[in-house]
Length: 131
Image (cartoon, helix red, strand yellow):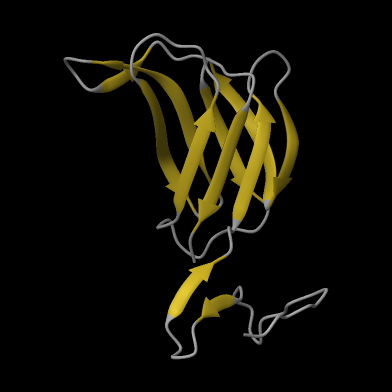
């Protein structure tokens, strides 16, 4: 087993580095964007990577904009928040474009399976994987 100790890893192309095993099978990638932000009161980014801004669209609804656009809209955002809602929490990602997406947090309407009762959260964590 070997240990790699370096300060910087660079790809030989404009694509992000990919982790492979000795057979050349891809074993993983790095997150392409992430953000930790305050979603209640004064909306503010605490820290982020590849996120240029957020917009407070309405209670529990936000737009997250990437600094560097993705090559397509087939990316995968994963989100956690500490909203205090009653019922089944729903995190909805919609209107994805290469430069960002919309995020909504609420509780589930059992009959229609739609989010309702949108609620702000004091802490959101979002990480995005993709090409």
